[in-house]
Length: 262
Image 1 (cartoon, helix red, strand yellow):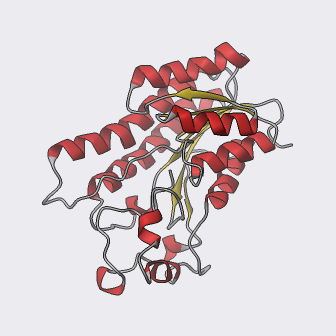
Image 2 (cartoon, rainbow, N blue to C red; image 1 turned 60 degrees about the horizontal axis):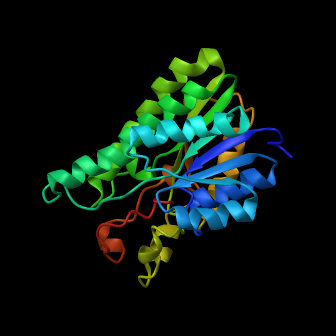
């Protein structure tokens, strides 16, 4: 068991077909005590019961709630070793038509939420630990209709590098995962469109889109003792080496980011 004796927090774990859920299951299977968190507490309780963990409601955009989540690990278990923020919201729109309120909301949830998460999880880690944030391949490969989300995720990748330097002396490693196209609850509407999956899988050298289990594998590696920090890790089947399908090469579905894994 790779995580025996460790305590983990996984935020964004309420979707049964999502990455956060899969990560929490994997951590528990490897021996960790896991606190699962998200806004939808009812769904969380099913996961917590399944893995023998603890469920706690938390809105990643609320700093007080994130601080309370970090403190709950100390209050319940006396330590925090691993923290993963898989929460996110891909609000759609172009630069020309996205309302100001949607831009602000995207930044609050996707960037500010990550700042709050790093700040408070690192604060309660008294020994070497691992913090993993979820970014998106859209942060490096422009994708139409999700500009605010993609820009916020690019800021997350920059945050990771700064946090890695700031917390490295304490043995705390900070990294991000950049999902490529993934089959998840959030991206499900995309794959229901005829021909969409084939167009995206065709841009991956491995010839398929990702699954939550693929990201649980990556999160488990980062949660261990790898000599890695400040890394923005693409988990895309090699899609970072190629490109996203162009608009004229695939069916159109505005406002859905296929790299959203929550």
